[in-house]
Length: 195
Length: 195
Image 1 (cartoon, rainbow over the protein chains, first blue to last red):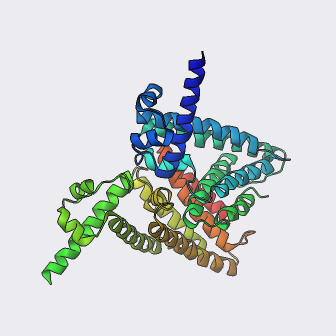
Image 2: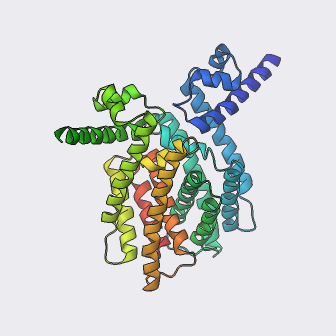
Image 3: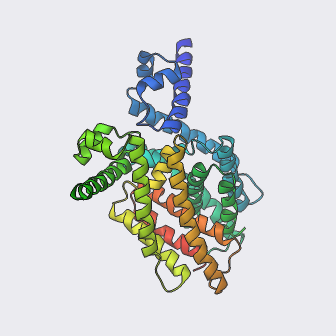
């Protein structure tokens, strides 16, 4: 039993340490020996938990996905559905700021690095974008019903546009490292949501 | 003189072939031997034109930048400033479609892969985003002056939002490979531009 708990802890540690290094250097650009030295885990132990680097990469994405939706659900708080969306975009931008605008979004990075070559990775990213969009769409439908919103485009497209704008904003602020290049987009999102 | 022309042609050939492989696999993930085999150029000849892989990467970005602005200027055509912007976004999306939604945008890819580690690469990408935004801002100011536009956010932020949306849309459609996930954003951009 104790061994299982320890094994679980090791797996968790490998996932978090590997996520950091994948975000920083990309998946292809990270070798198994770098993962071993970043995690401090022996090669045999690494392969005990993950059959291959691809297997580890996929598990890192799945783990980050769960964490992101936990974060998103918490951040979608506010007095009305539109405020919830704005607060959650702000919370995402605050995370970027906390990281000094380096590293960016694991899902966005992986989307650009891996989706053409690895369909399994692509399907996790797709799920992240779909579920995120879906959550926003539900809130926007609520807002429309209670006359908080009067939009000329569908709630679904509006939700997708918020996600695209957040991803684009993270990309642009990673290049400039300027806080303004991130938080300015909050005003753009408020404008989109007619807030 | 003939040698210079031939040298120029070789340089051009290396730039275009390397761009293709960098877009597909990323910069870090491409080895010099892969560049040699993709270009069919001898190692000595490659190093005659480019002192290092970094030097080649930077030249590829500069070359792609010139080509992009040539493309952008041509695509910004239409009966009024707002139509020009919409047509140019459509032209960019058409290019993505022509590529079957693989590879994406070299500048976006490089932004996420390289800006944290290579300030010279970051500065070319920054110039692309800045000049692109600037061109759109000038058109939007024109549109506001001629009462084509009545916006609650500044023309500058609106221009930045168009660029962020285009980059985010390319990212999302690369994951889904769905045409709809790209062209739907045209309606979102039209909505943003009050068109």
